[in-house]
Image (cartoon, rainbow, N blue to C red):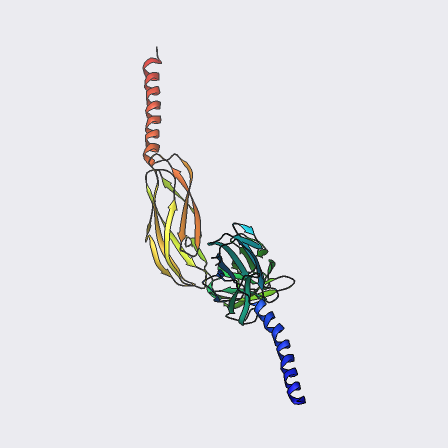
Length: 386
């Protein structure tokens, strides 16, 4: 008898203990018949720093108005969200019978987050609970990235080396980066964030900025490979980029004459041939050397040859310039500017040309003078005795 009483007592106590727990569980997952929350995207995979925009419907298939108090539960710390409907931030929606209302849930996944699966619930309190899942596809970071598709460039000592880099702020805050470099004396490095020269750039969270880096080597630099370190940094984060410049040699050209004489004379309307020398004073061969001239109006200057295919480093090439002066050129000094040009380097030379009067005019003047003297003498002899 005693054992039977103890058995029923134990059974009663178990039932009393289980009933409240069951009632509590039912109240947490309560679903009112005819009310639902719906979105087609219940499991989404994104990288760190991404924003997810859910479109969620509150569906009311009952015969009465339902007030849905919207809440989001179970999100980790530093995960921010925003609930909006009709352009407003909302916390409750009223839905007519046999109708539905839509709201948007914007969820910001932080940059500094562990890779993994995260569960949370969007609830219409006392009406319906909608479980959602976000899979973070990679390990998050709190850092800055400074990258370029081309780390190495080569060219002459006179060239400008232009690198196109990307600065990415992989933090959750706006960052102001100072752009700096450490180079040997004589090098000139210019930063152009977003194509405007500056020494700093502001980048929004999880955003990027284009940074152009122009590098000019010093004069008389030796052939070799040079490393140019650049940095984007502030008080909390930084990133380094190691650029490399390869100096192949130098382009230097001189257009002159064999003796260095840059003046001559010509008679108006006549031609004059001038011997020119194109000297390659650099360490790289010159190719496609084109010769041109800027002459006074009515003059004509031609070159033979008009173009040099190649002039090797340390060597020179001969060119003949033919200058034809205008027939109407008055006596005096004129300037003819001659130019030797390649895609890499240019050399200009100015020739001073003195225009002289043709000899025929001199002889004609003498004849006129003699004729005038003879006329005077004749008149004197004929009329002087009277």
